[in-house]
Amino acid sequence: MSENSIDPNNGSQEELETGLKVLSFCIPLAGAIIYFMNKDKAPKKAKAACTMALWGFGIAIVLNILATVLGGAASFMGN
Image (cartoon, rainbow, N blue to C red; front, side, top):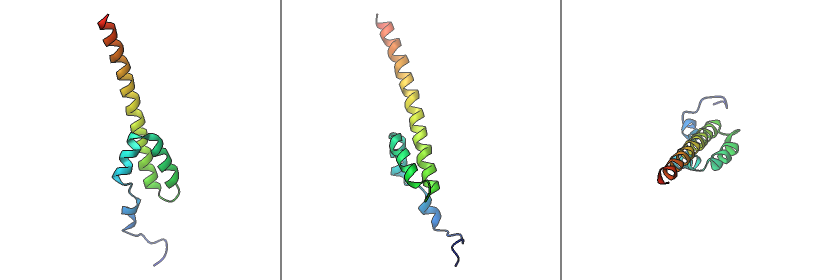
């Protein structure tokens, strides 16, 4: 077989494990580290880690904005 042939088992090795997806989501810096470690040798893993890190970062921003708005409203109503 040549090096360029398609290996059906390679797809499962290219998927990022669920635990690492959760880690990337909860700690976006870890997702960035996983991305840079895998970007050349396993681009699908790198993309999955980056996607989860960006989702985690975006949701964290939205939750912080909501907490700030609701906290401000609560302190305003308490006066």
